[in-house]
Length: 210
Image (cartoon, rainbow, N blue to C red; front, top):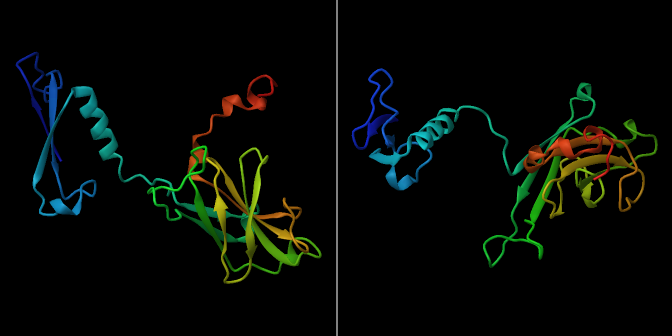
């Protein structure tokens, strides 16, 4: 990527590449993964931007090496790190004649497929437990949906329509109800839940309920 200053004459600073001109031109090689395969020959692409916008673009492109959370994959970890249990949730979009499947109130619909690795006997977490069950719940735990029973080599799948949500795997005894009763074995959060403002929580606003 090559940057060059363009635009009408104006104040210059030869040591800094003249960011004081009215526009800043970026020469971007189309081999970058930000562009479609149709430009795979590596032809340069010139984009002219105002200086501030150019700085922001450079900052975003330059930070590409930093890891980002996968929007459609949730890593499940154990509340007890020593257990070494892990799992994963794959969020898939169901087919829709309208392109994106949404609820009547505009929330995206996901098919959540939950799998775990090397699950031990459920009774090792709570006496009498005979199955693992996967759940999706909102961050406040006020809405819960059961995704299904999870066994060794099996996948539990169900529909999730929450904007921000968590996925839990619990050890249950007998046929599960509308909410979990057993201990939480695995836990993960959707990428959308990372954008939570804790300033609105009761703990941080002087005890005033929201």
